[in-house]
Length: 293
Image (cartoon, rainbow, N blue to C red):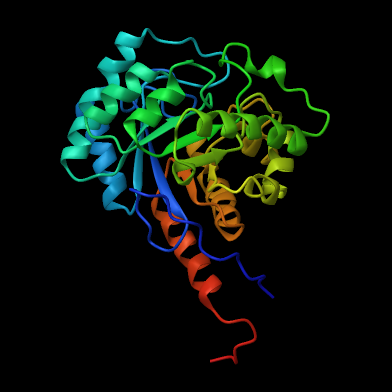
């Protein structure tokens, strides 16, 4: 017997509210992202891919110009701006709901001016001390992720007494800092940061206990797509298999996350996940104990 999914996630002002888990499609405008680095580096390619994701049903398109794979080096801010702004502007002009994936306040400002409607900050405001106040001034929704340091050293910090309790206890003051900076509480979205300063075992523990993150009282974004812990589960400890071979596992995690009440899932391949979250929403709408029809 299927268990009943949780009710529909809370809506976030200014963003789509279809009454189900949202699907965020990824467009990495980078040469070195772990999954698709280099594929969408040129603006024409990135825009075409973003439009394809929207056509396939993505509710939002997340544009990032800095790789956050383990060991990645940061590009200069000028290079990040060069990569993302033409893509943000053209996708926004085409009607896409665009998220800017950045840790830099300067990039957030320029991207929102170019049409982005959401700032997705994997550093939770720790990567740039100006970020929280900047987002408050921009008056856009903000994804605040659990983070312990930049990619070149984050895996050295993957030590926890209790990963679920520790992640929650570290997210709580970041949420408080965002509110103190003036970001409206209904605009803050939390992300437990799968793969960021976390081992495979840490990721699975967080997935099994998403209710602890939800207990902080904010919508939750989950980004598990194509990450290394899925490769390890499927027998690839050396992470040598093609990332696209992880899409079925990624869709499975997204389905379970949607059933657990996650507000949005961030994925590289959209169609199967769009179908999955619609199935989850339909099951959640079915009255408990209704007669078989």
